[in-house]
Image (cartoon, rainbow, N blue to C red; front, side):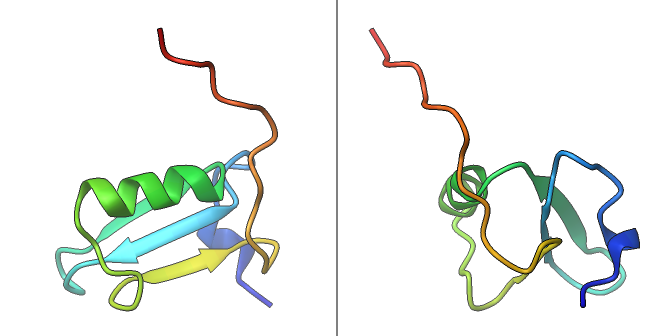
Length: 69
């Protein structure tokens, strides 16, 4: 079981950790789509970062994105 103290935000069940131990970066996401977008934007490899899920499973987005005009 994942330590729930790693997830201080109740609406963000996905945790991303990358970088060096001393100067690492930690981010939280509300859904898998936002995580994938962040990884793509910053050119991060999923195999080289640590991704934790509070509920131990990927979260699906609950609402659809608005179409761009």
